[in-house]
Image (cartoon, rainbow, N blue to C red; front, side):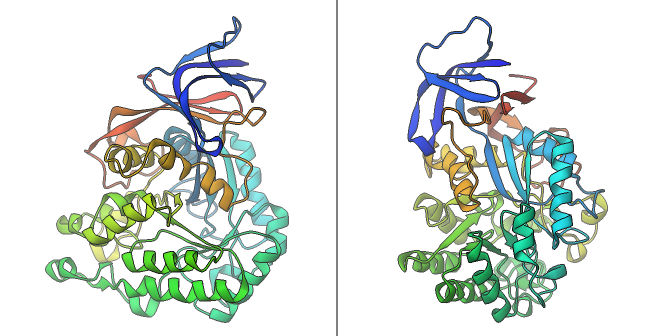
Amino acid sequence: MKLLIKNGIVVDPANKTEEKLDVFVANGKIFKIGRNISDRDAMIIDAKNCIVAPGFIDMHTHFREPGFEYKETIESGSRAAAKGGFTTVACMPNTSPAIDSQALVEFINLKSKQVGLIDVHAIGTITKGREGKELSPIGELVKAGAVAISDDGSSVMNAEILRRALEYAKMFNIPVIEHCEDPDLAGEGVMNEGYYSTLLGLKGIPKAAEEVIVARDILLARETGGRLHIAHVSTEGSIELIKWAKKQGLNVTAEAAPHHFSLDESTLKDYDTNFKMNPPLRTKEDVKAIRKALKDNVIEVIATDHAPHAEVDKRVEFNTAAYGIVGLETAFPLICEYLIRTGVLSLSQAIAKITVNPAQVLNLKKGSLAVDQNADIVVANVDKEVKITREFFASRSTNSPFIGKTLHGSVEYVIKKGKIIYQNAQA
């Protein structure tokens, strides 16, 4: 099958390209990029008013399979990813059972191939069963295809175990992705500790719960020379610590989730459980600091932390509701609305954070539009309005705080290895 994408602005940060060009796809590969390309046999996609970018990469998502298929499966998650423009995702291992063995990594790989829509990579656990007591067989996980290790959902509280994990992971050149939260400091908190937690009568989670673990882990990265990736950064203090680590030349990278640069704690005033997440929504000052850190590239990756939950998990009182929101379908509109259209990031800066940057963190040969690369491509309109409704979501779950909002940024076509896997009905 041949595709010819014409009239769009090619945004390919990996190759420092941002100009109006045609993209010609043949046999699943990018065959040629240039001006005035023609081919009488190719299917034409008119990308007028659109950008043409590499397929997006989400390095932090939860597909819930195995164990919680009533929330999301690899198949339904893949559909949600495709609708959001993502052609590659990496799944966190906090499933049931947790992804802590070669067999379970191979299960994720097999299911991904059976679905055949996008590339789904497994992230293995740091410790067996995510219990924080004994290292997982990291070499076997990597051999089976794991692209990173993480106990996401909780921190590895034993510093000696995390030190050894950084040392072992370094041998295989994979990152250790840390969910930074001290459970003793977090206690039974359900939102950010401060004015609004007092006003609402809810127990708060202090910023220090995140920051003390970020500081400890950075020191361990310095001690070991290992690769540390800080997940879903939510506080200004964490950013200052990451900035310090980068100045020291340490191998530390970081990500921010779209809800942490678009929402603050004041949005919880109606006790809507779709605003309950972990780390919690923080203050306006923290939101401002995250946007600046994205601009300054202290935070180089935007990751969705897509966390689907069924209504039975969310339609309960705030204290007992599950943490997290779906994020794959709304990530690009939120990036457009709060980062690109506000001038925080340029087009190239924004696209880099969901393409080449996560590819580099995970050692994936993806995230660019180079000739002879697999044709994983997104055609999207930055200025087109999208109304977020329950029907908007392809995920099995719809736990989103953005339902009812109108945002800018519409994914029009998604192409995986030269095949159209999503097309906006209104394109």
